[in-house]
Amino acid sequence: MRNAALWFDKKFGLEEHTIAHYAWVIVAIAGVVQMVGAAIRMAFGVLVDPLVDTFGWSPGSIGFAYALMSIITAIASPAAGWLGNRFGARRTMLVGTILFFIGMMWTSQTKHIWELYTAYGIVFGISQALLLVPVVPAVAAWFRRHLGLGTGIMMVSWSLGPALVVQVLAVLFSTVGWSQAFMIVGITGTLTLVLILMFFRNTPQDAGRIAYGTRMNDSPLITSGNIYIKTQKEFQRFTYKTNAFWNLINIHFLGCVGHAVILVGIIPLGISKGLGPLTAAGVLTTISVVSVITRFMAPVLAEKISAKTVMFIAFFGQGIGVFLLFTADSTLDFYIFAVTWAIPYGGEGTAFPVLIRKYYGHAPMGTTYGWQLLGAGLGMAVGGMIPGMVFDISGTYTWAIVLSGAFSLVGALAIVLLESTKKQLIPDWPVLEDNQEKITTSVATSVSITSISSGQTSGD
Image (cartoon, helix red, strand yellow):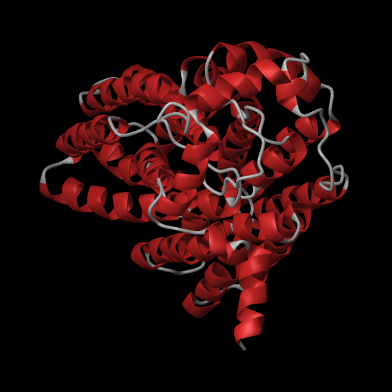
């Protein structure tokens, strides 16, 4: 038994793991940023009825604010990724925090529909991009190895955030009203972001530390400074020439259309089948909670087994699982669907950072990841509009279910067509300009081999 345990530790690198490393502080901060930034978007449905009751606006006109926010976030994502690379994730997220505060305060004082579109759709949309895009590549920079584990822990917040914020907003709406609720959440969220970003460091070099999982025989990596900024431009030109770069944007789009249809349409679909509003909302909450499991497991397995295989299973399961809704007529049926579908859904999007690392090595991924979130944001916007449009035309949600499954299954096919992950698609980025000696010297001056040794054993 002892020999088997030693073999497992050696194979999966568990002998390198320690909680006494600043990388986990970065992961924790990133998780909170994700919770604050993403939860308000996912909790938008709670805002619809109060605005209808207060101003008499139609649900469709209010829902356009969500679609506009998704589109603005998508369009701004590549720029947010580039800004994170160029000026650092911390500065970029601080600007996003300021816009978050403005958007939340303005939304809380909305009196006209155009103000909702401007405050929530445009200002908050840009804020989301600046908060959510740079943070994932920044986390990746802190992991020489075991990026899947760090990503998995961080991505759990995508499920926990909406689940918590929906309940908080529901309580606040009933006690202090929707306007004051947005003010409270806006002020609390802003103060939280400002506080935690004080402890955020863009890269191990900036903190005078080493990346998690660094070994003694590893060559130095440069993740900041003038050489980093200069070389990343050349790296990105190589990236644009790979089929995977464009295919991953497409895959992100297809997967997000597939699950956005369900996330937006499951409550009205359940109500149309006789479920009460609270019961139908419970189905969505169940999806969020159950998906936590695979949000964590998917990137871990993607790093240890095969990123393509894990992503294919998630997309295929998400596509096939929606067809359970064709025969769902009771509360039990809907909750069986929620548990079954949430498992592949949770793993659908969390393995992308690991796949980027496998294709492009330790090169800066901010711009690349930003372009992928462009596809994701457009997919969420399209998928969010499908249920209502289909119901308006046909009077049922049947074809919305079909379209959800079709988009996910086409995404699974696109994953099959991705290049192999057994070798990088571009050259090792630090030597693109034949300045390896210069780079190594630059890194060595900030992080010596002695600090690598002591950092690994002491957990710095």
